[in-house]
Length: 228
Ligand code: ADP
Ligand code: ADP
Image 1 (tube, rainbow, N blue to C red):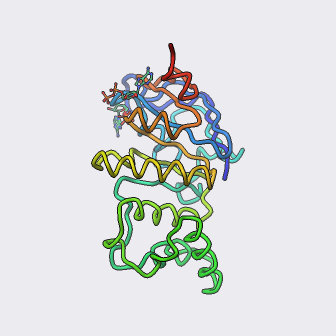
Image 2 (spheres, rainbow, N blue to C red):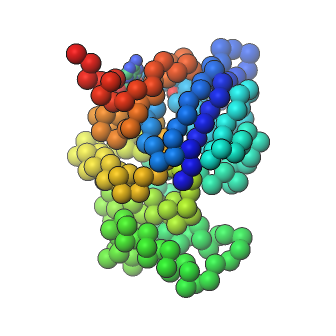
């Protein structure tokens, strides 16, 4: 786990108005922060700069106190959780979670892999599903497998880009509850982009509001949504 600090971050895609305009924010170690704002306000751009998929025009980005502006995505140790969890359909839950460990440069002994996957599965209540394939799981279970993968890697932070936006209302509600429970249990630093006010209210320690690339407000969900 790690803090994420942004100091005067600017992103220009060309000559026009900056997509991100002087954004500064400190996200504490273990904090769950929600990023909201209209389409085109710069949410994805900001997320991509944290992950390292987009160059920073000016300003400084720190992860765990270390400046990462020039670090490649693979050297940042962050886990991106997408809408479609990019699980391998032909692999079991166990093998899906173990996948990043088997990719690792310094090959991990099988015993160690088993230990890490077993522990993550226990935390995520997936123990009895380890031999199943993703196609036989519920949406919530699939999401947990994706998170299991990030946990075994010991990612410093999770980044979510509208992970629930393609789901129907019922499943969205279930997954929201799952993510909230998991966050309470794991306390992993998370940046979560959403359009959904209920998600912002129920998941976030704080909500950051972007508009035209400018940070308008950073406040607790209560301060933001329950004003008299
Ligand atoms: P879009 O046009 O992409 O649908 P919206 O303008 O509807 O974007 O905003 C998306 C979400 O962002 C809203 O549901 C709301 O929760 C949140 N949001 C946007 N601006 C603010 C604001 N100033 N204060 C609080 N929440 C905001
Ligand atoms: P959001 O995620 O809030 O919808 P984006 O970060 O996708 O906002 O976009 C912010 C602004 O940057 C928009 O004006 C968008 O058109 C522009 N933009 C995003 N990606 C690119 C790109 N690859 N090239 C040029 N402009 C871009």
